[in-house]
Image: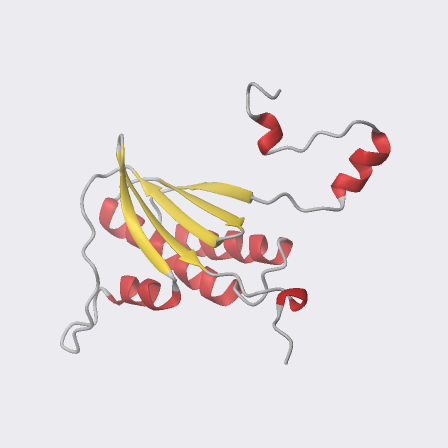
Length: 160
């Protein structure tokens, strides 16, 4: 298992008591994904999926922003790429990363606020809610990702 790199994602225990103890600890990285159709309902499914992940991972402070960001990224994939897409959420020490991979290549322009054009505000919202965001080409399309910082846990709060 070491040669395959499994132990970097799945901790191995020497015995049953240690295995039970490991069940109480969250791994350093958790993720899940959802494959979505090219359909208007995909943005709704994305909101529900990301909201549930935030609940499961105790990211209540991030839930609203994460739901909005995921919905905007999926809506853009459906509207502009016109392909199926994969929504992935990953939580690690760096924060919560939301990624949408579609099957249409192309560049995405950075948003600018234009009072005369109310279209295109989705990426402006993503830009404002995220620590950073960007795009990466894939073999058959692109990934658009956004990183939302996780707030420090109560034990990590600086004392006054």
